[in-house]
Image (cartoon, rainbow, N blue to C red; front, top):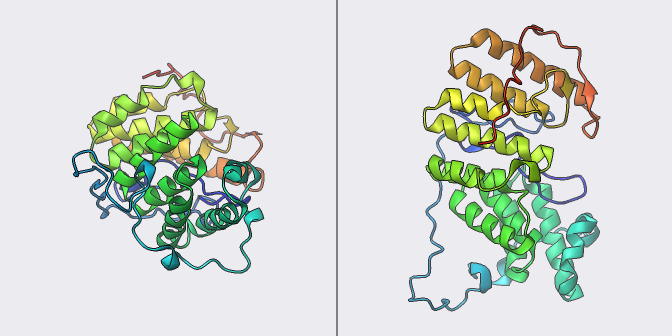
Length: 310
């Protein structure tokens, strides 16, 4: 997802995009209509094999920078930077991370990152090329490795995404991309590892939005293992509030409905889908605010039985 301030963000909707053609994962929705569009079918994608391992007996191969950024093409073959994209189009926090670079290099990196954010939804392949160009110039900068991870994830290269997310986490010390790491493990066909990774960080230490995305990714991993009841429990977190709409609510309600469908509880699933649509409509234009919903679904349901701490 591209940020209005010009920084690449996690793809629109919830983790699990790799299996959006699979009803068991509940697909990622396109962002063209504010995240409420048609489900994108990426079920035919195959995760790319991780070729990052050094087979040279521990030596760094020639032409490879630290942190394993391979010089895959000379700089003169970098994607073109349009005249209308400027360093200021990258958000201020991200630009602040580039201060250790020379001004000329920092400006070029900022422009490539801004282009990656601009193109991530419309041309992810070109966005990825811009992220690679930035990484070749600034491979030790957290936001650069984060952007490369996001573009790789969007393209379905989960091995690269996971490797870059690990590097981003090591450089930044942050866990805000943990949900994407969990989902990348799923993309590589390793739901067990995904669950183990998701349990490695206390939920209380994460912001609400990240907790929700993590719960959805963990639920998807449970479904991968055929554990539908456990998948539902993963989603029964305090943020699953049917009476209030937060920016993360539509994706969480959708995920809950998906698991209910899997369990054959179709009527309940339909009500949660209605809540999702209601929340999305209420939040349109006000995504930074919490909105109280008029719940049109049954008032007898209480999904908040027990919080699951995994």
